[in-house]
Amino acid sequence: MVAMINKRLLIKHLLAHNDENSFYDKKRKIDIGQKEGKAKFLKHICALSNSNPKNNSYIVIGVEDEDNKIIGVDFFDDSKIQNLINAYLTNPPIVQYENIPFPHLPDDKVVGLVTIRPIGKLTALRKNIWKYYGGSVFFRDGSISMPKVFESDIKDVNSKIVEAIELNAQNNIEHTLDGVMDFMSKRKDFNAQYRVFKEYFVVCWAGQKKTVKNEVFYSRVDIELINEQVRLFFSALDEVSIKISEHTFEIIEYVNLGFQKSFKYYPLEETIINFQDNANYNIETKLLFEPPKFNKKTLFHIYNTNNALLEKLKKGLSLTETENLDLRNLPSTYLICYLNNFEDAVEKLQESQPYLKNYSKTVYKLYKETVRILRKVKYN
Image (tube, rainbow, N blue to C red):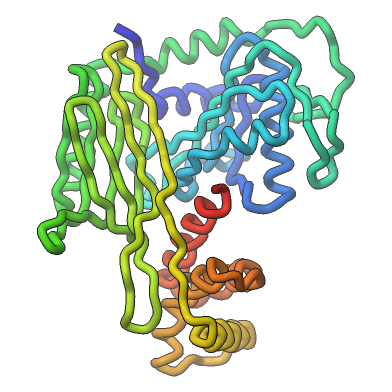
């Protein structure tokens, strides 16, 4: 039987090495939506891959630097992260981003775990990004990723340490059972269920169930692969349909878009988790989204209303009851405008972020959900 690594345990063992070193790095957060954040992320991937040609390296995201306190970050479901790595790095390593739930964190927070598997060749930056030049080669110098002249003889000092850490983080039946019990107990208000696949994998999932025209949908969905303590899907808002077969777990995610009282559900993305006989699994994602088209005159009116609302927020002016309702729709209506060729709508949406965050938790949650959809659509 293939041993699975309990990623929550792995993170604890990595953090026990208090200082970052040449095989792992820790971050409070990353922002690969902005050029600077993307460039720094690529630099760290490059440096860790080059400094550890014979073992995995890791980046742990959602941790305070000074005292290793786990604060968590938003769930990040970017299946296209390897595309980013391949586009910017020559001899790119294999990179996986996973969302790891911790019991003390709020439901919408996880710890991000980036696993970097080198391919035994020197990794370099393929093209310019931010202030780094194409052709740059990075290595780890202690806890810092530095540009260096390539040294042909890289000393393999970490393989034994990493091997020991991974060995100590292997799952067992006690961890698995504890994980199932924790999930079922925490999610009992949300129709919590579990399913065993191939006599080895345990998937727990929960969501608020509703039936529309004989079709079953779930909202506030949470899905975890318990063997590895990995959260596979999480959404505070979306509608999701779930289909289970003997060896697959399929999710179709829908988004609710529209104006005023006229909203419609559009399929966004299909995710299929395939469980295999050799104690392996893979996840396939496919974008299904077809952007809705709306009348240009209506869109101009809504776009201008949004811009006026944003200006009022910037000036700290109070909003009327109607404007408060419009504000709830501001993130999704900016998205609709962008999908209908209002190119500036994305900049306006980004501009609104700090003001929505200060104004209302509910509206800010809607903003984050909209940005998540936008990221998926833009990557494709």
